Image 1 (cartoon, rainbow, N blue to C red):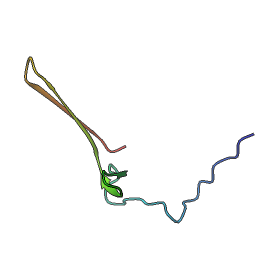
Image 2 (tube, rainbow, N blue to C red):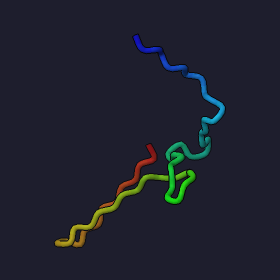
Image 3 (cartoon, rainbow, N blue to C red):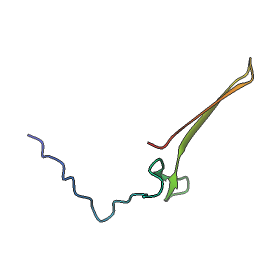
Image 4 (cartoon, rainbow, N blue to C red):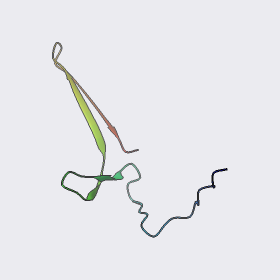
Length: 56
């Protein structure tokens, strides 16, 4: 039977108390930054632009 995960935070765990929408994400070239996940799309027939972002 699998073990129940330990809910207590580990020493390396991090949290942003001022912006709960952002996340610590890996960046190109190595390392991590406090970031957002943004996505955009363009419809070439109508020139419509759609933009979304996710913090989670």
